Length: 327
Length: 216
Image 1 (tube, rainbow over the protein chains, first blue to last red):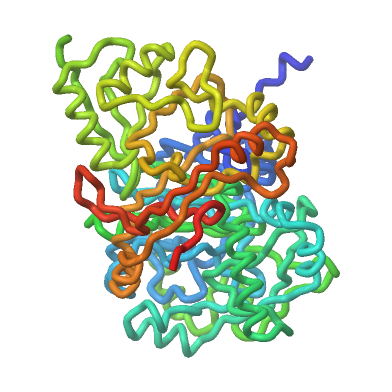
Image 2 (image 1 turned 135 degrees about the vertical axis):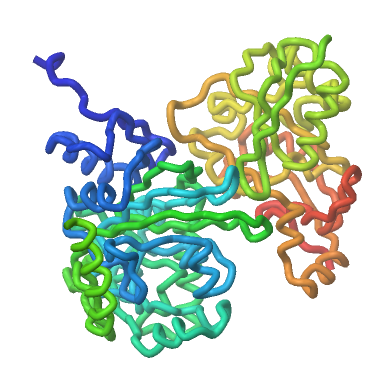
């Protein structure tokens, strides 16, 4: 009866190690459990999947995300959540201008989302609303393939190492002073993660460091840590393990945040364009290393559906708007 | 030879544009050639989709922009087409003496900079490609230079570097390519910052890790 089983979605790989486009799924509608299962399978295999021409709003975006797990609050440092949608993190060139000065992404380097938290999101779902005609691409890298591409001796060396991740690592050098940044500094988010993470679903080993948030490797001298991290950062950014995606309005990218890092646009600095995307993240578990030892929180709260304690008031205001909207 | 309606669609912030409305199997008017050249100078690499052309047509197209070179100083041309270099895994296996040998060659590079006059342009045509994987990435060396800090620019402008054609250490000593390099070594000293002869722009002169050594 193989013929009777229609393929629910069409998965087209886009690069040798990472990335696939999924066709035949309308994310605004009620998707069958079978469709959700095939999207999840494609995500686990290709690490990031893309959907084109999706006409969805904030509520539909969140509803789609909920099919895959619990949706987090926008971001541990989001103190001005979108009215009615505290789960949505805007990636908005205009909003950044007021918070940080001109920029197009919240972190300009390769990074995995929110790894400063003890439980970084399991996945991120990003949807494009306003994008430039050209430029502004995002690139993802497969941290499992990057790990596997290292020689056995280096893999053995890093299998037992742990590294500190913190939010706001390089603010001092690249961003202007603002009340927002002061709040970030006063509420540090710091975690010690294994350098090699065992993926909770696929059991694959991933090279879980990235220049955006990884500050140093524990137990090494500063020189050793810097040199080894440079090597690992270069490894994860090798073009061999990457896929680059050009956004159109209505494009959606869904990545496995346990097995990828990504790089925001690098080529817009000389252009005066608007770029607005919206991100939703799924609550993640606490990473576990090859030795079975879990990550250890040094500062900050678990990152889940509830906003951090100090942001509860802002959250309540946003959530009450939601009730009005729904009434 | 009527002029075609040529559209130039940029595809990234600094590098690359797709050219639409050109059929390379037909002769191009001078105005079309001028438009394509202008897009090439601005975007550094241009792409044309859906072209089903023969090696003869590829060479004829190239001739509109300058004088085609022999395929390569050290590598064999396609039989019957002395200007066409095959990029073909099966041929690399013969020349490098092993299936995976070429993998380490795939660092960033500018074509044939080991010669005194590296090619002005390269025109690459795909014939057989995998359904996924196998992408090529280009970088804009003018933008890369412009992005350096002023003191580094001033420093780089004074330097010259040696470019030589070489292969990774683990390529067999008995391979065809090693014998050819030994018989005909290619080594040139270039400025590290090159002034583009048409645009006047300054660019990093492709100092590639595997084949360049700084001369001091």
